[in-house]
Length: 216
Image (tube, rainbow, N blue to C red; front, side):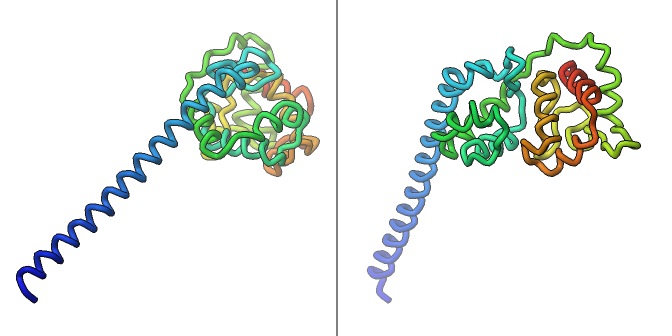
């Protein structure tokens, strides 16, 4: 092969490599742009839409609506997709969240989850209830003679959540109690939680809810 042909081949190879690298850079820049747009949209949705019930930073002051600040992003993604797919069928999900989530695409859902996960949970004003002590006992140790496992085994010793299991610390007691009742009746169909809640009596659920609300 002549020197001229070698030079031409080398130039062509370098040009091709450059084009491939430029294409990769452009794709990365486009992905960043899309991610940035999703983040901006999610922040706007969080403040102007979700904030009506959950507070602008996810620190809801209305006991009916859950606190989202500091919640695990993976859990929030799963719940929002469940609302969008209409597979989470408890009454509040149907009334409030099915419609809200129907227009959310995956990037916005993921950005919303990341937004709330990054917010700092504000301390609850609750804590003086006499139910906190028995609630702690159930949370940490369960109720062996009733077949109720310790909540801490899935939600962590500090109730900040483990793996796919959500943060419960600081959550409104009213909301926790309602969800436990929904799990118990299978209105909210989650097999693991139905197994936990099915043997809990109402006073025991109230105690667990009071304990969780008091946790930082």
